[in-house]
Image (cartoon, rainbow, N blue to C red):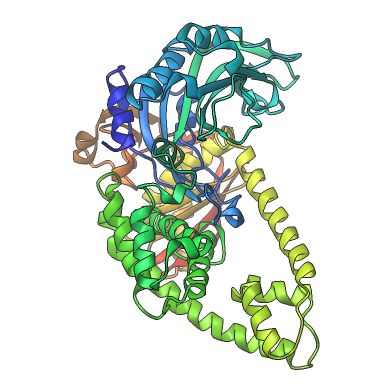
Length: 583
């Protein structure tokens, strides 16, 4: 049985309700480009909002992290991964969470106790050592020498950030044929972390003090790819049953062996899998030069470069064969893969054609750079890489044919600067993990519902939301439309929304089954992401939508609505950027 099925069945038997995986593109959360952890879609509920499924939840969540994109190609880095999680929202706490983690590892996955070790929080000036967790592990049979206390690594999210926080306990597995040492050293790379239990026990105040929460939460996470490799005794994740069907297709289309082409085949397998999931996401992301679209473009093009490296005819339908295998492997778990199969194949094929053209342009640029007969400096080499997708190896090869040298060290320096910028941006976006739900964001969230309703009245009743992004400065709303809005249409939309705001219409909330909600006429952006019991927000008789919230209580809280920009987002999709002004 698949580890996902084992996990869900285990926690269902412990009174948990399974919730569906959220899309990879987060809805109304500007802090990250993609859902990067299993807990991210649950932030409003961890902050106190009631979940329609109750207080014990479990799932497998699609996650994407791109801050280590350039590391992919080794044995364990992945951009897309699946995270198993179980949560307690003010229900059970440390005793149950720890004992169930131990039970699942040792009795369901049959991991010997002697191959396990754990870390706990050591305590510091603001919070005491987590002796409760230590004693629970001891009572289950984990020896004291296998329990290591740390400060920085066992506090979530970190010691500086204000808000919900608490100690965590990580579980490690001895992945080696060497004898298991008596004493646990988490710095020994043969000990591999496989699970983490986070105990949201405190609130970290702005003044640096912490206070105990009246309702405590548990958030856990276990990576499917890493755990599968461990259980199958593989030191290379790509040799596990998760990756081998994809690797075999790459071997067939390239007529090469994995053992001799590991790095390129890992990159192709990883990037193609991630590209399939982004393309199939209900948010309708297409390759572009900004945001999620840029990541999608970069992944596909990097996969194409490495396909070329191992001799695949990139004009063949190789990417279709790989994508079809990935779609088939995951379609039983994620319904959108089957429903959006043709979209995925079209995205990959179109981007391949565009990149082939870009490669031709890159060759022209290369010829310009080398026309003077001068060696290629680091800036020029990086420009060829970053703008035209030329791997440094290709630039070197072409330069050698002309008897020219390439400043590899200069290229590496430029590449390193680029990496640092990428990581800083990624860290900045992730740092706000529990943010994005303040008073102004809540107002903008409600305003998107009014905008959706107004567009139906003024422009076309068949208009629907195709995506949204909210910050504290503005809202961005994507919708299907076959034309640029006229000034008159924009003016009428603004006027209608501001009339509704002035009317002071109450915003109400109801919980009902998904079927009842759809029958009642409630609109839903991505129906498949919602659980069987849903929350429906109504603004009088103007708007009725399935939504996770948060919202204002009355439209008169919103201020004045003003459209700042209306533009094309993609084919058949328009985008409005708007603000709320306090007057």
